[in-house]
Length: 130
Image (cartoon, rainbow, N blue to C red):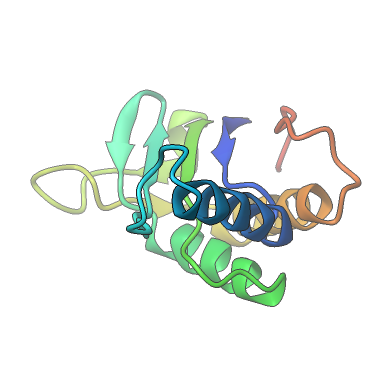
């Protein structure tokens, strides 16, 4: 099992960055006055792009719990054994059934909480879930 990816900065840090960008834009030193609220959620399992709505919901819930106002962006590449998921649920193969969904969600939740509370290096580590 492995998870690699990128995730938005902790919400309070994100707000500081946005405030600096707005100050820069209002002083005429470049930047756009229009704030962009684009959220990216990209997930793959063993290189195949998939939809993971429960992971998206979890990230958004945690984001709000940490005080985030805009939406977070997440890119996660999961490496799972073939018996840990089933992609044969829809013709486009993006709908996935995870056999250890609760474990995976718990792992992601623990990491994100540690990351945003400052007690993580910011890198997903390979973990064994059985």
